[in-house]
Structures are given as C-alpha cells and as structure tokens.
Image (cartoon, rainbow over all chains, first blue to last red; front, side, top):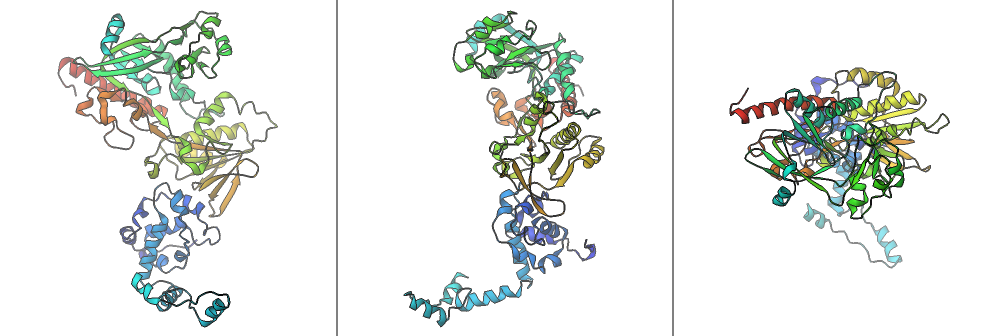
Length: 154
Length: 426
C-alpha cells in the first residue's frame, strides 16, 4: 500500500477538474465500482482503475494523476458511462484530466510526436514513395498529403 | 355522477373524522393511534385483505429474532379488526373525491365479488372451481380465502358465479353490479405506501430475461411459499448473490435517493439463507451499507462473518453457458471476476405511488409530490386536511412507518382540534 502525504495534495484540484469541460460529474461519484467492473482496459492493465482515478482526483493527487501514464490508456468506449448510476460520465472526466495534463505539459512524448506527424503530414503516418509505388502496382491512385486540411480543422 | 350515487346510497353515507387510504402498516397503525386519541376513522383499500405489502413479507428469524418487523403487521391487523372506532372498507375503489365545506367527500365502489371473512371456513372449494388462476387467494392471517378482484372474470366483463354456487358456507356473494358507497371525513390520510422498482428497467441485470435473476420481493414470496424449506438436503442450491441499490441512488432513472430498507432486508435474508443452508455461499454486492437501525453495525459485523461482502456493484449479469446467471464484478482485490450463481437477488428500491393516486384524489392536483422533492409532506394551502403517513411520504421500514403514523396521528389530532374549535393548539 502506498502512503499518501496529505501535505502534497492539492485540495482545489477536484474543483479544477469539475469546472473543466466534461469533468462536471466528478463529484457525484458514490464509488460503486460499476465502471471498473465494466472497463475493458482495467481487465488487462490493473493500474487503470476508473474508480481509483476518480478518488485520486477527489483527494487532490494532482501530481500523481497528471504525470501518470495510465490516464492515457482510456479507449473511449464509454462502457463506464453506460453503467454509472450517478451519471458521472467517466470518459468525459478522463478527457478533462487529459486536457489538464496537456496544459501542464505532462502529456507523454509520443503524443507530441503524433501531433507533429499530424501537423506535417495531415495523418498519423507519413505516406512515402514506397506506399505510393505499391498503390500504383495495385492500380490505385497515389495519395497526396494535405497537411493544410488538418491546420484548417484546428 | 355524484348526484346519481347520492340518490342510490343516501342511507349508506359514512361519517368519520378521518378517512385513511391504504390498509398497509402505516394505515393500520395510524388508525390505531387515532383510535387511542378518540378519533374514529375509516380505512379504505382496494385489496380484500388488510396488511398491504408488508403482509407479504416473511419472518427473517434465524435462531433468534432479526427484528425485521414482518410479524408486527399481524398484530396491527388484529388490533384494528376488533376496534369499534375503525371501519375497514376493504375491496373498495375510490371513484371520485371532492372538498366540501365540512371536509372531504369520497365516493367508493365496492367490488361485486366478495367472500365474507367471518363465514369462510377455509375449505378451498372456491379456489378449486375458479376458472381464473390467481383470482381466489388465501388470507395469510386467518386461513380464509378472498377474491382478488383484478384477476376475477367479473372484472374482465364476463359473468361467472361458480365460486358462489360451490361455497358450502354461503360466504361468497357475487352481485351483478358493484355497490357504491360514500364517506364523509374531516381529514384524509394518504397511506398508500410504495411501489417497488420495476427491475426490468435496469436491462443490464437481466431481470425477466435470465432465469435465476429475481427481485427481493420474489425472494419474499419464495420464503413464504416454502420454496427453500421444501428443497430437501440433496438440492443443488449452493450460491446466491444480492445486488444492492437496484432502482435507488440512481440519477439516470430519476431516483437519486436511498430506499433505506434494502440493506437491512438483504442482510436479514442473507443470514436467514445461511442459517437454512450452512454450506451455501452468499455474496452481497453493495455501494456502501446504510445504517439506519440502531443495532445495524452489530448486524453488519455478524453478517460479515457469514456473507461475502463485496464493495462494488456488478457491471452486468449475463446468461452463463449452464443456463445460470453470471455476474461480472470487480472484487475487493480489484480483480475483475465473472462468477456463476444459482440465484441472483436484485434489491429493488422503493418508489412513490402518488402518480397513481393523483388521478382519483383530484384535489391534490399537481402537488401530488414525489420522493426526493422537498415539497412532499409539507403543509400546503391547497392540501390542508390531507396528511401522508408511512412510505407514501418517503421510503420507510415497517418500524419507521409505525413511528411516522404515530406522528401523523398527533398532527391530525391538532388539525381536528383547530377546525372544530377554531383555535390552533400548539
């Protein structure tokens, strides 16, 4: 069992999450564990436990949450929101937490690399001559990258 | 319509100080308390037998009493039956209601098929000859029979008097038309109790779809019908699960309140089953155990030695390969488990009956209220003289309903003093 140092907690963190978009339901959680029982990620990665994440946010474990790797594991399947009797909408709560982590520059390095790829190529993979040669052999038209479309979406 | 009934039953107008709607434990204890204060009352119920829902509950005593309160209902039924101040108007439907200068007027309709409880010897010939299953039922207190009119062929527009002809005791009277009655009262007490949550609404728990998934009220019926007692020693019944908060504390279905009784009855039922079958595995899934009884902590401690208490509501109940229910849950060690049970009991919550009674109690109007909204039970100018007792006013256990009825009896007494003398007695 890990000890929690109360002096290092941020009591205002829960209000910060609750006031961000998607995080409104955070404080209505009864900790009934239905979300954890429904979560497909929790079945394989024990560290990812929706109920515990909510408790951590409510306790104000800002550093532990925002710097953790597990908050990025959510697959956005909305199973937790489906079973929640209190309408917490955990998937939206985790989005709010992820947004806060990004704004605190705690996002994993892979994420900014993905962002760079999107920015340069308009997609998560660079389309090289190799792919286009293969497509020509198969009689398909070559793909032209339009990174400016992505810029426009932002 | 009121005039027509007036002319028909001029001599049948009943004057009482209080008309109590509902003969459940709240209505019965309210009538008894009022009688102690010297106030006469009429108890109106559409059922043929007094006792309400609590009368259908089973005693949960193991080797010692678990204080479930089911037996108290029997006491109150007998107290009320012998009381001259109380007039039971059973098998009566309320057709219409109005506020008069003197108080209230209720128009009742007594159903045309009745068994005189005093004459019935309990031979059961009527039940044997009755073409409609479920229409003739046995009174759990007296052993006599009564007609559940909603199941009777007469209620469906047929003409039938088979039971009347078969009865040896001449106790059954089937008339061609219903008997109108009129009650005048100074005050009205609504003691219509609660409506159990319809578990089919929570689809992920599979009630009505998966065999072996039952509600707590079904479990009461199994206890009462002797299902467990008659199982014998070579049965295959080895595991049962209780799922709490089904239809309570659920914002998504508009019931964001605790039903207050489910933890208690699930715990008592679990211990009773463990007492009957010491080798079975009893698991209870809960959010948090609500402690309303004064000795509840002790009971939780005692139960935790016999019952697997798991803090976590299952995400779903599936139909297993062997045809039994499979519960998906996250156990106390944070492991997701899929476990098969022989039986899963959903502890269904309590909901208000007021949306239904609003129809015939027109003068209550839009202020019929709901559990959980603050307006319920508060005095309101449009409902002066209308009181709510027991779980018509919010979820209550049997004991709490009795206590609340005593409180309401005092309130009614004060109200009656006020309207009779014009002085507010504090």
